[in-house]
Structures are given as C-alpha cells and as structure tokens.
Length: 579
Image 1: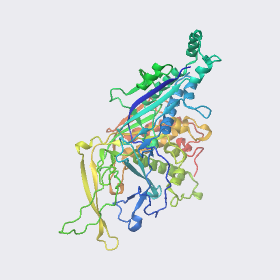
Image 2: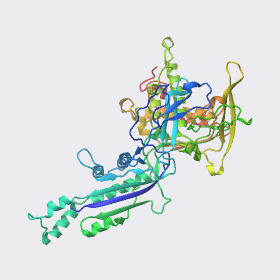
Image 3: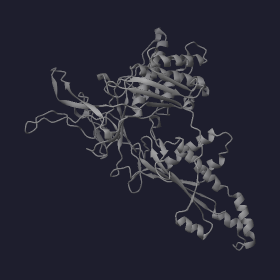
C-alpha cells in the first residue's frame, strides 16, 4: 500500500469573539488581594462608584490568556481546534440516517490507534499587537444584592469579530511497511510478474484515501453550516467561525501519492491540487428568537479602563481645571495599548443580555417556589452570604437547564448585539457629567467628578438560540418534551417582561438608563414546541407583544401532561414544586 498525503487549507472569518485558554493561572479571589506581583495584572477602578475609597477601590484581575508557541506568539491550539471539529463531525453523522461513520471516527484516533490527521495550530500573530491580544472584561452580578459580586471580576484575551484565520489540516493514509511486507520476496525484491497483482490487491484494500477525502468534505460542510465553535464561553455566542467566501479560493486540498520519485517531487513542489465539495449538512434543530428593539434612554455597557482615570477636579497651574476622562461604551475591538482607542462597531455583549435574562428568570422561579411553601414553614432563603457561583448552583432546575452553571453549559445562547452604525460614521453620543455628594456635609464631594458617554444609536436585533436537546440534560428519568415546554414557558415569561419595558439592559439602570422598547419579536423552532414552526409578534393597537406571547405560552402550558394543575411550574425543580 502506498502512502498518500493530504493538506487541507481553509480560510475562515470569526463571527464572534474567540477565547481558548492556555495553562490556567492561579487567581487570588479574596477581596483585598491588592496588586499582584505579576506584571500582566491590570488595575481597574469603577469611576462611577464614589463609595469605594482607599485600597478597596482598586480591584485587580489576572487575565485568562491564549496559549503561546515557542516564539511567544498567541495561538489557537491544534487540540482545541481538533476537538471542536470532531464534535461537529459527530453531530453531522448522527443527523444522517443510515450513514456508517465508523471509518470516519477511526481517523481521529483513539487510545489504541494514532490519529491519521494533524490539526495545526492557528497562529494569531496577525491579530495581536506586540504579542498582545485585546482584553474583554466581565463581572458576575450578585443575585441577592443586585450589584457586582465580590471576587467576580474577570477578563479574557479575545480574537475579535471579523478577523481572518487560516485553518490547516494534514493527513496521511497507507503504509510503506505494508507495501514491503506484502510485495517483497524473501530476498527483498519485487518480481515484475507480481506487480500487476500487487497493485490490484492494494487498490482493493486502499480505502483510506477515499475516507480522508470524505471526512474533509464533512468538515467543510460543518463549517458552512455554522456547527463549529472554537474555544470557551459558547453560551454567550463566542467562538463562532465561518468560511471566508470573500477570498478567491475559500479552501484548497492538495494530494500526493508517495509511491514513486515523481510523487516525492510533486510533494516538494507543493502537491497536486484536488477538487473537493462541502458535504450538504442539515442545519441543527434550534429555537431561534429575534427581538427588534430600541432604547429611548440609551444603553451603556462600559469599556473597562486600563488604568486609574483622573477623577479629581483640582486647580492646575494657570488656573485651568483638570478634565474628566469619560467612561466610553464598549466596542468590538478593544485597544491593546494603555492609551489606545478602541475600534469597531459598538457592542452589547451576549453575556450582558444573558445575565439580565437569567436574573429575571431566577426571580420568577423563586417567587413561584416561595409562594408554594406552606405558610407555617415559610422561610425566605438567605442568599446574602452565598458566593455568586453557589447562588447560580442553587437556582431552580429549569433555570439551570436554560442558563447552565459552572458545572455544565446551558441550552440558551445569547449572541452579541451590534449597533447599526459603524464607527466610521461616528455615532452620536451624549456625555453626562456627575459629581457625588458628600454624605456628611450634604455638599459636593471632593475628587468625585466623573463623566459617562452614552451612545445615541440604533441596535440590531437581540438574537437568542435554544438547543432543545440540551434542555433534557440532567432532568429526572432522562426527561421528555414536557421539560422542554416548561423551560420555554419560563423563558417566555422573561421575554414578556422584557417586552413590557420592566427589564432594563446594561448598566446604570437605577439612574433610569437601559430602558428597552420591543417593536417586534420572531420565534422559530420545531413544530412540536413552536406550533406552526414560526411565531411573529408586532405591537398593534389591540394587543401588546407581551399579551400575544403569553397567549401562545398558555397553549404550550396546556400541552404539558402533569398530575397536578399548576402546569409548567410543577416542573421547576424536577418533580413537583419544592421550596
């Protein structure tokens, strides 16, 4: 059997930020952790909170970074890419009825057999600036206090949206040893009369080449269908890539048979170009929600400052006053420089919207469960001393199925929401200056002048996706469609509150910011859950969007088969309502 080598090159473009970590660093999560000795640690101060003073006003993070190669360049590791591709190919294989995938699965390798594929790392040096990648910061909100949770400040290095990546996979089939053992005589020679019989036998056995080409075709199909996501934080829409059709040749496959000196020369010259088509992949079954909206008050998701801004309004030499450094809205491409300007369109992260939806879903679930407890034993659960991660783990079952915990991923994905105006058009903004009052004298507090810039833009639709199969993970007795319907009812109640304007987004909501006005909502999904496969609600003079949505949810609730009359809420904690 001769050896055949392949090289597949695919040009990709990121559809959302990507983060795939290297070796995890130990992080000191105590409140008074001070400034780390690590030179990479960045000090962050919230300029809008005048109550933080002294050492407590400085909060620090240890960023989660990409892996680095030997030259110090950030890379997306081959093992991470291979795992994402293998999971996507398995998903395609399960969706195809009667498709024998045992041969494809063997190519990935196992404990007993080395992989026939080599997935090469993607170097990110073209994205990085001086070996640094942009940082995206985030917080977790305490469910009891409604503020940023202690020890829950974190940051990730990211590859921003619309960056170009090049995926390279090589493969080898056949074996020189098999050729030698099958064809040589005792003297190690290959008689001429046996050549035709040997070639016919090897041609009959050599199915590896066709299998590799088939696998490459399925990989391309999975990429075209959007089934491949790299790295972490997929629940917030991160990691999505697509084939870049803006280039002349989105992918190319080179094949060389190394059974002759001519084959070796062809390989050294770059290989022989081979045509390959992407496998037609059926899109996965998802519930997709698109919400058209606007904000009359403005939305602010602030960009995290890389250094402590000047906040004191004191006299400068010459009588001039020091100006404030305004808090700016977040953009898709944060600057890697200390004083650099971020670029790209304005963005509301999926994690920000997802956190608001989860907080409201948790409140709805706890209200229902608390109302069901007998009055004689009613006791409000005390979350005031619980760590935020324990609060998430203590949520009702349906909340955990939708949004996940630190132990497992939830079924709901919230994609990033971009402004409809690009940065080159310089969207309008309103700068607001504040000064905190002194709680003792009642006058203006010294050194507490700060300002914020609120963008006045239109936003694209808020987009959500729900994986119905993931809703059945971890439910009692394997679960059934009733749990899917119950989870959809809970999510629908949250969206109904969003539609009424009672669920703000972004920060500064206690100052009247972040109000949402929903103008249209479209929900698509399987007919077993979404009757007719598509719902579309628009505001009219008769019924509001929330009323139309609640009417559909009542029909879903009527389909749930439970022994007690509460319907979907009976499944909040799995089997019956529990405190």
